[in-house]
Image 1: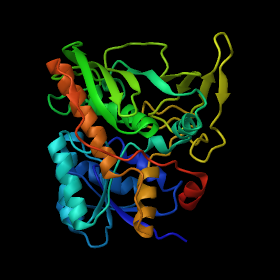
Image 2 (image 1 turned 30 degrees about the horizontal axis):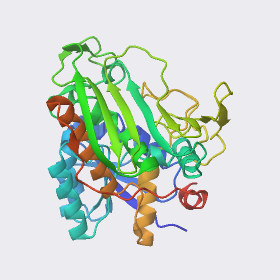
Image 3 (image 1 turned 180 degrees about the horizontal axis):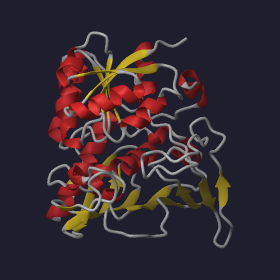
Image 4 (image 1 turned 90 degrees about the horizontal axis):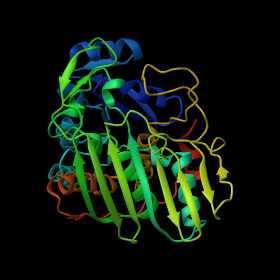
Length: 385
């Protein structure tokens, strides 16, 4: 029987619901206390989920809490994670690890010095969709993959988030920081570390209108680029064209397409856990479907509409898997999959894409990481209810 780790949640906003739901799926995590700089949000979370609310400083020093779950806005990730580590807590944070590489490196350095675990979303690459894709890539089903396309194109987070302004702020805003982690982490999982990036930006509308919640209809100013067109060259020589945009009303492109010497592959949405993988090995042939609905983290587990407006019914969504897998790894004293090295490497790619796109100068990736191993059924069965 696994040890159940006591978790303190900081940031009682839009995403908190998803992590409380994770307790239904995983057997070794329990959120026992919550905190937020907005006391009203903390009280609401406390009442809704039956946990005690504290101030941020109180929860960081609480002796009962073993892991801090950092669900604050991106620019606060570094500060909260650093304080948690310095207070002797393991940390699992929402993406990105930080909003600049220097801060990310410091977090990793502190975690190593203190011998604490530093985990980071996204954990969607642990799901059936990306894991099935990884299996097929490593089996060489479509041969050596030399190139591919990855596309996230959407009107913007203001359509489904009640407080979208931070995602359009000068330093921590834009689609690369917001959605890039899902796509880039999935690609690192498939191909290993990146070598260099290039890119350019396109600016969208200067003002956006909030589409949901108490501020619905209110306009706010955009202070960051909202479309990035980039190219990532991986160390294994695979080249991926990556489009990340908050300026596209609709499109019919696949999330990720990979082109190998013996065929092509469609990889499902890296923002979700499930979804079928498709391959085609001959011009004119039908695409072969590899379903993931019978995989542990590919099964449909949401059948009613969540309060999260972008979380439609009939999805496989097991956010919290990375937190649970990290907790199990702490107990067994082994390396976790959503680890600090991978998160720092993804942050390096993110910040390098933004710099390359704004400057027009190609950027070399300076960090290293080891390509994640496969998340096997044996591994999953140890933590899933």
